[in-house]
Image 1 (cartoon, rainbow, N blue to C red):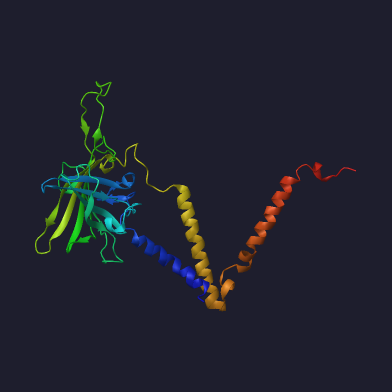
Image 2: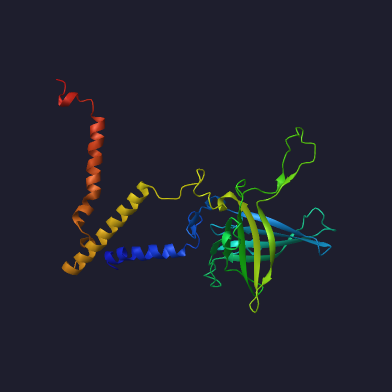
Length: 312
């Protein structure tokens, strides 16, 4: 059985490993001294592309992504019809015969494309995100470009390039739908469509000797604006005093226990509970809490004893 000091000493190492496992923190993205908070864009977002160039079959490709976490498995859908665990960007190609099945009652899944994600346990590929400002490419642009990797399909590496464009009038959750015009009270007149904030740009091979299939998506959102994080409407991402106090207190207590245990082990050859500094006091804490609780209960329940005198 390992001494308690060994477990305590392993705490910082475990924390470092957990920190290294985080590939992209949507809440705190800092690029060239500019900070961005994309946490409001977390969750599943999709855009579909309809292909009618190969009649009589028709194809629909749905590209789905979650910038902040791996995509969750869909209930009621077979595992082979959706991307594996760890996927951040996924493409699903479905087909049907438009002549024999105009109502799309027999849609089949043709391909499942894991474009980007962490697949360390399967293919050994990681997300390896790269974030850059659009201003580095065009001084008149405002926003971010996020490159996500890790996918492998059809013997080719996959990559997703998401261009987040600053649009102060959009949150990024807008989907393509019909909107009612101001002069249309009954809703009978033709309505103008509202375009989706997330849009498909292209998907295909790029590069020279080692070709990579690259998916390009555009996403319009106010959270990609460089001045949004400093505006009044932005969510403050800094830690408050209470959070820092808890963190410093935890680190202080951990350092005290680790150093005290190490000292007792090397100086006195202590084992088990004797490793901990003030071990006797720590072992008595449950009894102290129990006695204190009992006194509080007795005080509350005996509040009407008339100052300690009992009736004759």
